[in-house]
Length: 316
Image (cartoon, rainbow, N blue to C red):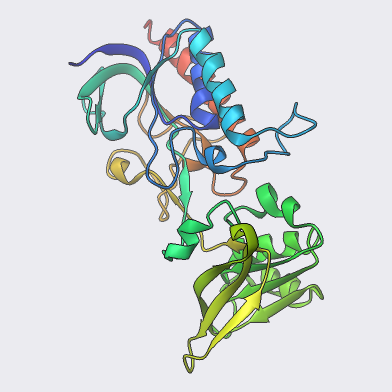
């Protein structure tokens, strides 16, 4: 059965839950449609991160699930309602807007905040799923610290992969880049930095076939296959970082909201306003550069304030 809300927030990562906190404190009584999928549960990528050491206010670090539980509880305290479902479609052709979910029907709202996040693109290997967040990672800034004094690999050849690899050389004992071609796809300046970094080595013309578990199921290496002759070799490592890009969770918004060629939602200037008045966007479905929990949270705050002020200007 459809119910009406002043604000509906689609997504429950750091951006969505911060937006929920600010909206609920403004007495907007938001409905937060939590989202999530088989890879990333409701709460976003921090839900699969064991130790978060770069979120301000936690000098000893904090478990990702605990952090998101605190986000959720704080927003709920001020009046946020949660729905364990996913956004399927948003109809902006009439006011109020209609948000259709996968299983719970449709809901109407005066304003909508989109905070659906982005999922890392993965290789699709069974062993990748087995070791995901336990040896196989997608964010060097988030998880590189755990491999101090150890050797790691980076999979990919674009700008993201080179950024990850260069960063990891500062916190690990050595980095091997695995790339399926004989030359990098990264921009010229990123290539130069990587190719002249003495702590970086390259394994060209190869693709990962299997991430290998060692004692206690910790990662011990990656088996790669040559794209030239099919030869298989094993590269010893303690950690692997898959850096082949991200996919913003905006597929259901194509034709509704403006987005770039990669699916990231476009906002106006230094705001959260989309091309549809009354619909706002924040977090990793917008941000393809920083992709950090703390920046996502800040963007969620911006979206809530923008929504509140817009509603006030509309007399709603």
